[in-house]
Length: 330
Image (cartoon, rainbow, N blue to C red; front, side):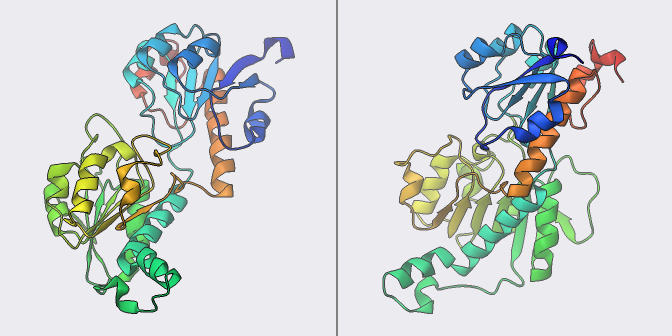
């Protein structure tokens, strides 16, 4: 393809420091323009004539999608696609691609790290030592981890890998997932209510959808044991932050660890920041240098396939494949 016939690809926003991997994948088929805006007005300003779009947090609402004149494919940096109106994209014949498998190891490791840090009272012990208190009972009571019950909300790639990694610790493992069909005999399938009531540790790994928004709300949190911990490395909106603040403040659960928030970055004056029984990390679970490169190359590959009239490996709105032009591309 000659330079004059290169497709136009817009990267709406990206905090990875470089777009060299994307350029390497797309250099012979597309000219890339990088912006750093993800709001509706910004997207309407520079995406209208793009053939393909790569986005991190772009607000691809129905209004934005309906305005796009030439777009064939949008791919998001990440697993979740909750910033894109999938129904509107399907109506517009736009494939929404994503990368479901680039950071499975990293996120499951991060979740395991948070679980172990909560269980062992690492944050509290560190703070006490720095304050001059050399006393193991500062984090009492710490129960023996073997024999405890881990409940996993969402047994997809990451949830299942977490289960595999923590299984040797001697935990009983429960999970709830309405969509998983193959269940190993060492994971017990239960309802969400049963999981919340029985688990000593609850780890959230489901996507954010209309069905799961605030799935872990006030009623769910009050079903948990007072001695239990909650970990969320999935999406902030799955947990009702206001309800979590309340139960942590009242010590109705023992503690929590959050890598994700409903609003990111989390405001510095957020009530969560005042709690001493909470560990916070800045949406970092996905991160390693290797995962960044893998993500960027896979996103660019998905867009390249779409520009070439081919189907990317992971499509969030599969009904679009029944519509032109994709119905004839399979």
